Amino acid sequence: MKSSPIRLKQKLSPKAAAAKKKRDIEYAKSPARKRKKAENQRIGQRSDSDLHHTGSGVKRVSIKNNRGNFGRGTKKE
Image (cartoon, rainbow, N blue to C red; front, top):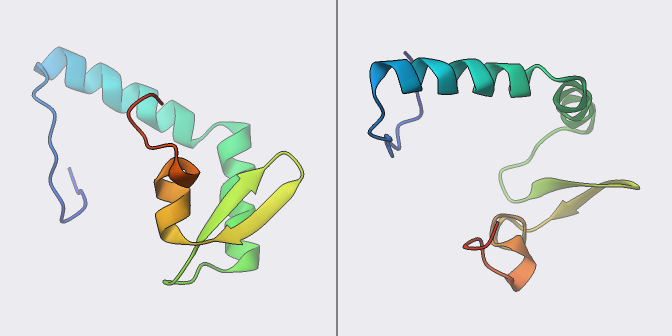
């Protein structure tokens, strides 16, 4: 299995890992994700910012804000 260079591997049983892989693939191929991926490709990603999808469209925001939940942290997500 190919993965990112940052390895934060979960300790899952083989059965649970297979189920998670199936769920992740289904989510990645959902119609909403496909639309977002296509939109990102049209806009073009840059290394200095993230594309943040809102109900009204896409905004280019700083990586720190987008991944930090805009100052609210990520613990409660």
